[in-house]
Length: 173
Image (cartoon, rainbow, N blue to C red; front, side, top):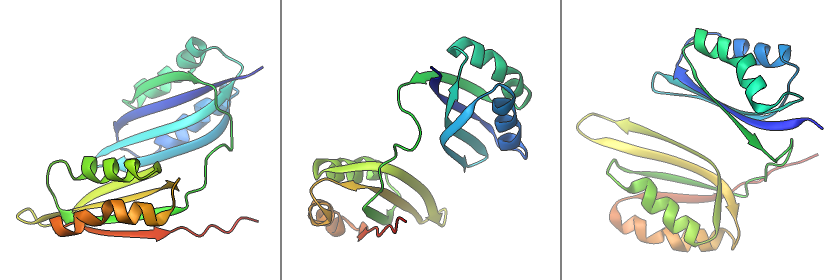
């Protein structure tokens, strides 16, 4: 039975990374599952699930030449999950506030206590150097409903943090 691996590659962004890595995986006989690829600053990261007949070390050896050539750090970890097991988000949280230490920890802790399972989180800093604004977008599943998340995050409004909790309507089919 084929093995599942979580592959993580991190390095400086440059054209062709996705093409080279996915070609190396195809040539190694892998099937891709879910993946996430993003640029943060001047850096690029790929996380992907791959199915392979090879063991962990053999897969690492097959990918390492491409990773080294592209200046990427490669991690290969065995995982048990297969394809198509990602939950569908039912809530989206948008946060805007003055950039300050602890804002992500505060928002995510309050939301987790209210039953939020985070599926995706993106953040950025906008505004100006003298007045930076932290922007946070979270998608997830609300175990106790959207209202519980709204109530948990409401105190942040008095701290100058704008929070908007929205339902995510997903049409499947």
